[in-house]
Picture 1: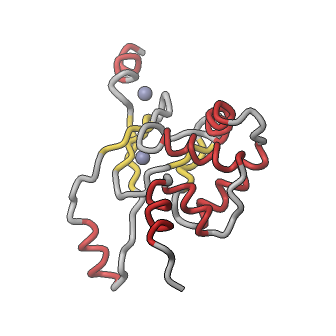
Picture 2: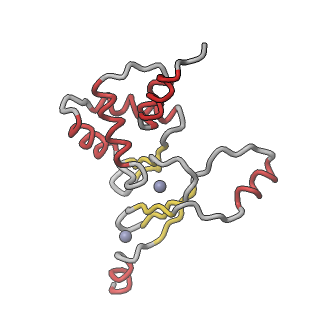
Picture 3: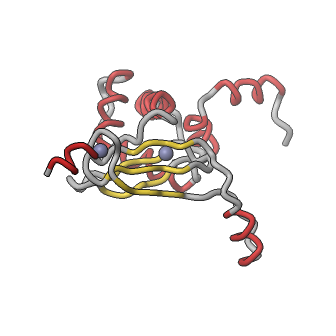
Length: 156
Ligand SMILES: [Zn+2]
Ligand SMILES: [Zn+2]
């Protein structure tokens, strides 16, 4: 079945998260749409925790429940539209909302995660050649002590 032209335009105007839910066959409830809007607003800016996503989504729709946030994140993760970066010192899991290949740099003191836009390292070619894989993405994480935390470190 070929979708009507109008339909294609409509889908392109949606953020990638809303489009992902639609593609997964989920009903776009106002709760889910609010969560997607919140995610789209944070993508490429911060690496939010579930709690932060929940609070941001509530600004669009006060009725959003934490359970729906978890369910929605699970569906989006399954579709490869976000992934978990792992827990910080408090145990809260941070999410990566920008799945384009980029380097994350995390500070082991303040747990701040900074994005470094794609820096070509030649690594992908090497990995693809040595494994025979057709690569579709990468997760890269560097860790260290950020400039804001470094002075405290040397003062000790
Ligand atoms: Zn720091
Ligand atoms: Zn990132």
